[in-house]
Image (cartoon, rainbow, N blue to C red; front, side, top):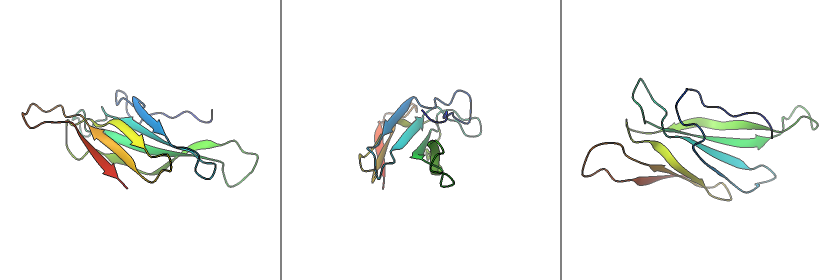
Length: 116
């Protein structure tokens, strides 16, 4: 249905986690996680991208397409697997993005970060 969605880098785990909202004004949103996305050679920084199911404004007959909304959300630290789980509220007002730490530490616990 629509255009293919792909990650930007091989091995980033694009689509390994995802969630979809209800239709909001006829337009659902899709939140896609890439927990293995790497930055500057460090694996597991993680990335989440938000897409909207839109019809191009140029034509009512044009097919709908997934269009990325805003900039991708990146993990704040190396090796935390940001977006190891993602959830979007049914009305799209909130998203929650989980972190699954790969660090070897007694304080390394999974956590959830909310974005409004």
